[in-house]
View 1 (cartoon, rainbow, N blue to C red):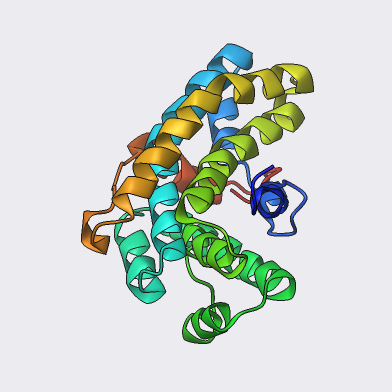
View 2 (cartoon, rainbow, N blue to C red):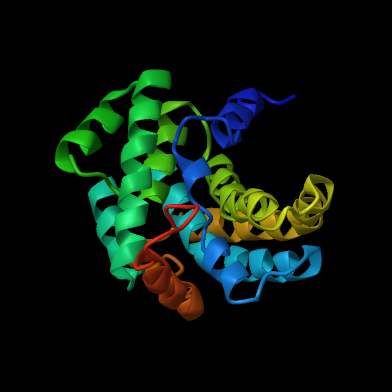
Length: 222
């Protein structure tokens, strides 16, 4: 195992206390709308999310891990997130990840961002800064962001539909080549200026996030 691989596993582990277990990544709204019904439709949902929101998040994370200004990246994340509900969710998750990161891999960069964004920075930016503080590479950060963008919805659908966990895991396994490709593209983009980072959009995800936020009863926070 290469140096840093074990650290990456800790960061990407769903049990890392960053709050992601309370969020479905849009899957709850997609289940209610009938767009996710089984393993095949879950695969389509996750694949679409991976190449849109996932690519954008992976590039932001990679850029933060590469040393780009996290405040500039946070502004770029805002610009790439039209939905107010999605921005609130990203900052809530960023705040929770910041708490976990500062306990696990404390460092001055994390402290500075926490002070500058006391209500929370966007989660992909915090994820990338966490990876940097943990001694990981920008590509590592991109891999972690790509993985969590599909693993969260897959895990949520097991609870929402009673989907067989083996089927959900098989979906993630089939998406592995796509995750590799997205991480590679994100890592390459992180070498350029912040304004040139990917801004792949997912309008339906934005719309359904706003609808989901208005539900009086829901299983997941987003």
